[in-house]
Figure 1 (cartoon, rainbow, N blue to C red):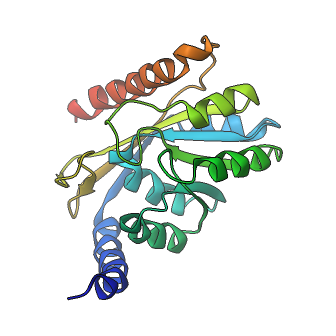
Figure 2 (figure 1 turned 45 degrees about the vertical axis):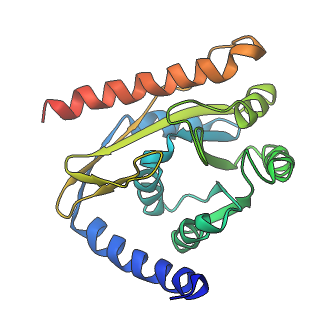
Length: 215
């Protein structure tokens, strides 16, 4: 089977499978008021999540009727995920930290001029290493005084793909947990921005994991 056929069929197949899975799952959301409070402020928002849980985060926002932008890699393999995000009402910024990054920064700079815009990024994407934030979007957000909020996600039962990030796919009838972190308020030195964000995001992951282990 040619790659063209695979890229044509894969999004339809995956969307069908995910539609079935997600419609059987329960959702538990922690601290959504933190996000609602950020929305009331006259400042754009940068949503930060790790690549392995972005599928869960994206699906959650699908049901919120909130208009979000997401950074989508120009790599051919990413076209499948891009197709799903479009179906879930995301608007896409094409590029990544390894290809087309200038276009991403220019577009984000433009979008951050509107206080109502919300952009979602996977800080360790598109190719890792996992749980290590890259500084590009973070430096821009801090410079333009954008609100930064980490969103963590996991599932009570899941599969993990054999990829660099071990993407989480929830199993049918599992519970999906989403947690919003307090807004990032530190002002780290420019050389330590990525490290500070990584620690901030992992703190939210650890907090969520402690809650789910009690279930």
